[in-house]
Amino acid sequence: MLRYIFLPVFTLLLLTACGGNDLDQLKEWGHCKGCDLSSANLSGEVIWAKDKTGANLAGADLRAADLTGADLRAADLTGANLVNTNLTGAKLFQVDFTGANLTGAKLNSTDLRWANLTEANLRQADLTGADLTEAKLNRAKLNGANLTGADLFLADLTGAETLGANFTKANLHSAYIDGLIGADLTGALNVPD
Image (cartoon, rainbow, N blue to C red; front, side, top):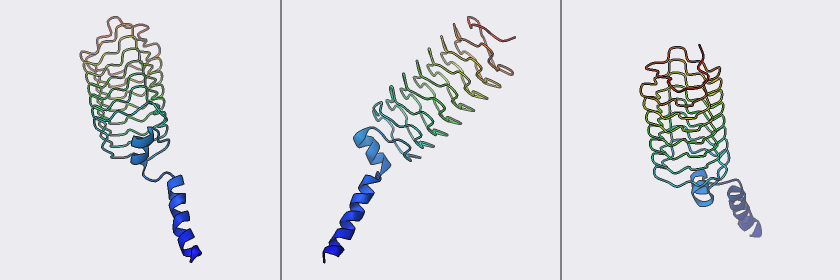
């Protein structure tokens, strides 16, 4: 009889120790390292700055979420909806934002080194003081974005749309700017020839 009781209890304890539901873990504890939150609806949520490195948030709905200071290093946010999301001061090192919608997002003072923003929609996004060293912004939509003081050292902006974008004091040293659409680099620093 004891054997029949012990086995289900042991199984329950094992499942609990292994993490259970990743979305519940994120909401309860604020961290979810390497968890799978693909296609999750986190719209309007306040998600504290705990460890979410390597998380899978592909296709997730994060509209108007507060991710201030979040640690999302190496996370997958391909195709995610981040319209009006606050990512101020977030650690977004090596994050994959391919095809993500970041319209109106607050990305000021973020670490976006080596991030992949290929074909991402960054219209009206605030990237003031962001570190975009070696970021991929190929064919990204940066129309009306604020890149004041951003570091774009070795960033790839090939074919990016930049109509109305503000590059005042942005560092473009060794950046790839071939085929920029609507570019006005007035006030930018170290503009490549």
